[in-house]
Length: 120
Length: 148
Image (spheres, rainbow over the protein chains, first blue to last red):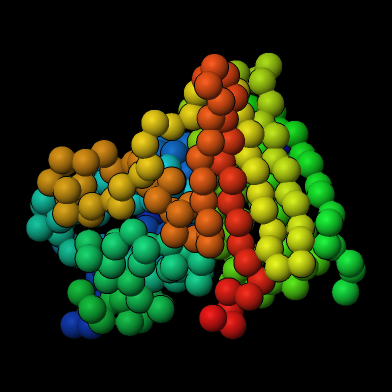
């Protein structure tokens, strides 16, 4: 088994917000674990400290507790900078895990991109 | 449906991150044969993954000369999973992660694996021997859970 089976890919995309403003979207894919730090934080650095951001998990499979720790770190940084974040596209299992851990108190958890964008 | 009562399946994993996926797949297959619903199987997979990651990282300290044992035992009403490593085990049960404390940097953003395990299965128990050279976590999910 190669480490690639756990690899996370993060791309930065743009979408339209409710008032026509352009919002950055970090789109994650693969599995998310502690090993995903470079991929996730590398992309996050490009959008941190600015306006509202969407996090897209619709192409993410398994997220372990190390991966959840990275996501919490991003959300804490955003919160300290006064930056709004909305999350969408979680699988049922990942939504369950996020809810159990109270991550919904740090960022809105939404079904799809449209709803998430409208919340910001 | 395949008769699973009394069946036992054992897998040995190298202490290398990524191999927890093998345990997840095996646990999912056995749970499926026993007739667990998909959402319970997903919970079990996550709990087994966390237990294996703990065993690989903390129990065996990523020492690839050591293996992690995963023993699945099926009975009429429940599936028991033991994840065994060569570590000293834990000294106290995990507390629920506090998001507010994490927000204020008063709590490590990590350290949620054991809480997740406890939350996702019907029973979780951490056991270690007196010599501190062997420990295991025992997870149980019950078939009648969805009828409660």
